[in-house]
Image (cartoon, rainbow, N blue to C red; front, side):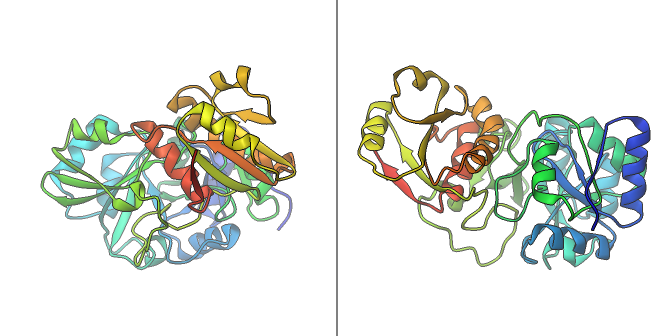
Length: 339
């Protein structure tokens, strides 16, 4: 395929992006979470191009992105009433809900499952393109499978040049991590399959019983027999560098790094650690929100700098920090050190 076409967010360029999607092409589009690799979710051949471009396993389901509740109802059925309460609170936004699918959703989108993951993105560019196409868009992260997700158009170009038709440059993603994914286990019970910017505490304000899947909190590689949600694979979001996740206090983290002998190593620490850190480092924010926004950018930066080993100071495993930790432990392939 020829070089990727970089489009702006002008009305004419969004019309051009929608025309490509209607013709069965794949286009990189911005969302508030990460950039998505979008195709018409009802077009099996177009969706197959997503898997080909990413090198993504066929059993890894995709999220379909809708622009309205009525569009969700066209492609999902037997929708629990709690879905509407959650949608009123969190949509448009970074929450994905797994629902029974209608027959018009191809199995290639769902990984062969009878359920479909649905999200209404907050990003206005993405929603406008969905409306222009008139169909939901299947859109996993616009990166090579397993590598750090893209939070800028340049990241998409770096991974997808020559693989897809175009990317729309909508600037830097405001959230920086993929959406929270939930499934339903009863009238007022849900399970978090992938943590994200919508936290367990926020969900608990709407639903009494919020279960956090054990694969999220476990420090051991998960045994996933059936992939119900994107991001459940053992190793994911990984740079070329070896990532070692180091937990707990800063002084012990610093001591651990001082004892390592690997060449071309670097540490990823919090902004407020930098003043007293004498070794090679990058920072990724002071708050969980900043860490979420900057994490994937820093993992990509590590590869551009030729870093071979990256020691990462682990965030707290609560609120948005749980989502950041989840991405890091998978990027590390569950290589965790108690400092």
